[in-house]
Image (cartoon, rainbow over all chains, first blue to last red; front, side):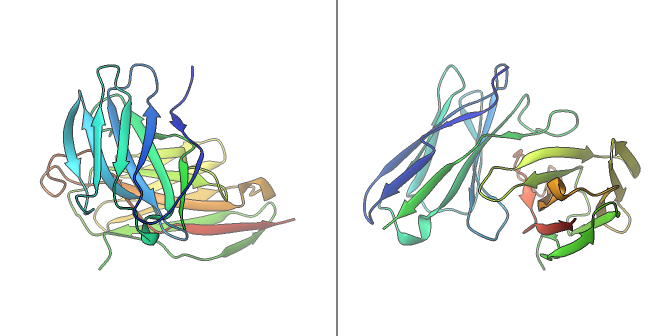
Length: 116
Length: 116
């Protein structure tokens, strides 16, 4: 079975631009979460979507938005890019929204975003 | 106080030794605990999860949980150079503390170096 797939793998943008990152969860998984990981730090939670509804939002500005489609794939959008948005953006999927006991979150390979 | 704390390391052990990685967390109601391995430039890979006090073994890996002390650890027996990576501790917080999301809270990771 395919794991979590993310596209693109790498992206270079300039300040002020907009970016859309895409994620397809593991087949059967209905929950998709987005994380930002800057160099030397652990991933930071951005959003969670379950059954196409936002179930959680981390401490990120309104420039960050996301949505989930009927096939459970998801997009993360970031507007007005800043240098500080340079990071590895990770998508994780799980069967249920809590992703806890026996239903852990599995990560995709990530999208490395560089802002010039 | 950080929600999840890990010593950033690096932790250096000789090949064949036991590597001990530690993590503390602040939310006493946290329910599930995860260890992810992350190779340089790659995404986190789930290696263990635990939710009951005590030990859980899987091959060369043992996760240990002590909820009273709010402490979780990962032991790697017979360490191999291929185990050299950053190990991320992640916690699924209590329903109350997490505002009903499935977000994971990560530590900053411990870098493990296994020397041949």
